[in-house]
Image (tube, rainbow, N blue to C red; front, side, top):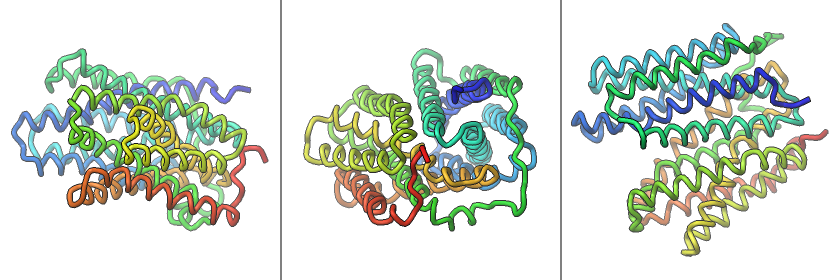
Length: 381
């Protein structure tokens, strides 16, 4: 039986539409604020409020899913994000947009936990790698579609909001025709803290933190590194697109390899590739193969680490585990760029790839020194 059942395909279709709208707004909101003459620190606060919302949404998602179920929580989160987007057109002010983006961030995180948890509950251990890989493919494809749309449509606030809201409303529709069973509370309610204390999931959680450090640094600071290296804006866009496309191409093959040969084997390969590609950039080797390999390994690290951590989780623990993993990734994606930016400011831009390589080396040491004290993360048991 195929892992991609009708409900799974409809869920991924909804995610594709939602992610496309989210990507458009994440790019345009700072630009709209610049056009309205807000200061740099105010724009930074508005951007940070979105990521703060991600943290809050991660913490409350489990309660919402246990209370309302997957379908209703998904619909409520989509509606919440749509309302927050609609309110952007009411007034362009620092305080109001900070609030609207905070609410949007909460809704996004809830959507992510719903989709990840529903996918994991829909498949067996043998196919979870493929399901999570498909999830990441759809997520990154939506991100690319959103960026491509910006090149062919007017980007004024009044022009963008109508069609973005229309796409968000369309994202609600697929789950009207698919149903995911509401989690049943058997015994003690599972919480994030309980998942963090699980030794058999520790390396998977650590992998999500490292993934956040790597991807957060690449998303936020690689354009700066390339610009300072003399590349024009169009060239920077090309290199970023190359890296993201490599990540998309690697999702399904990596997921199948993890299902067949085990998470530990694939994680070691990924981390080794991250280290070698970072060293290649630092030693001024060809940028194209280095960034392609970095995207291939770095962008596929999160779903494999997630599959590891969820492998021994009981069905009633999957929601709490997914909250924990998303929270870990978010912490890494916030802390990594902050540390890397400070090092780049005081030393040199080369610190970007030094930090990525050091983070990968630390995780590699964990994979070799601690793996034997955890369950063997094989798909076939």
